[in-house]
Length: 155
Figure 1 (tube, rainbow, N blue to C red):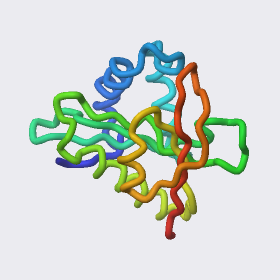
Figure 2 (figure 1 turned 180 degrees about the vertical axis):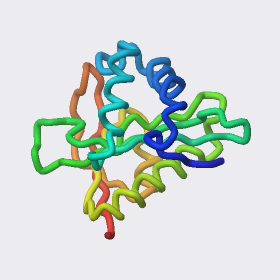
Figure 3 (figure 1 turned 90 degrees about the horizontal axis):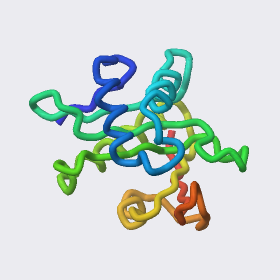
Figure 4 (figure 1 turned 135 degrees about the vertical axis):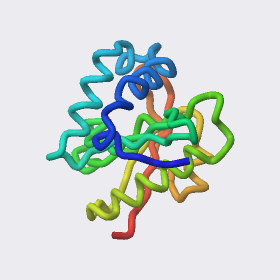
């Protein structure tokens, strides 16, 4: 497995867009391919601290993706940086790919002197707890009950 920055490999934009759409198109933020594509392009602009990483297998197939996002939830201005849009292709789950991708995002965030990351998840609390995340609250996001979690980073 190799992890690449989407900004450096725009040829993976289309398949990454489809991966996100296929997983979450039932939710408003992922209901349209063009909406997702535009968001990925904007997030991965060279002047942004945000980024998207993709995991590739030996055949250069995108097997997973994840992003560092500013203000994923906008209601608390102190919660700036978020881990989001973490997805592993269903055929590749259970192999540790998502975990490695998350670790790399954390590492790159720390290199940017980001001191904490937030996320929300409906069902992967134990995975994130094992990676050092701490539960902060439960709330409804886009009609779905989720847990908001935080992880302090060492820069």
